[in-house]
Image 1: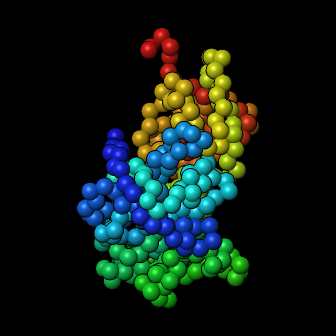
Image 2: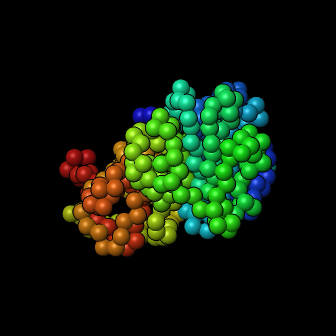
Length: 326
């Protein structure tokens, strides 16, 4: 497995509000050595939701600091409970976190870099901005937000990039035109993206439409976003009388495994596809929140990534677990 979860006890050192609804947390692991970590790294944080232990994944903000790990958490009304838990913590709180891990591969030899962030997606992009600016790279950052008042780290980014920072604020009528942006880029450009799933889907289509190789669009994901509201749904197991309720605070993967219907997994971020299970029937609608399946595969609804994807209504799945095989 790529992600070996070594849990480390840690202390919440401080918090600060960056913008309405966005709070930064400085977390200091015990025996912290301040070692550098790759761009796009994230940590998992152990949280408690409705009395049950859960895990939430947060991108690390910026490059490594001697004072600990920085994460920024948006207080989301549509949250599955992780942001509510984090926001009620006060400095001094004890936490368990994992070591940093990253799937965002950056080719540092390119001549041109285009960074795109949507809202709280700026968190992993800040570290890439710092690294590229330090190297003197040709880099431009396009930051899409509802308003400048909601743009976290805006001053830091402006100091790093100057006029190479382009803010697309919706309330100013400056929407991000991904098709036009990607069409203007040289063919050897590398794009780094982080934003909500609908924005990522649009970016992938626009990138291909502009004639760029898809591998040159690199992205960091947060699978909590989807096209449907996060709500309770039900899962039936094929050829059984088992029907499980998936509450809005928990993933299908966690509920299935807690109920003894084992599903393999690795990243728990909708990126690796190891937790994909067969969908037999859909009485409602599936909200595919992964980045593993292609558009065609998502439209077919033949499989679902249990770690991040959700549904409206009831779906019937086949976990391939057989009672006579146990």
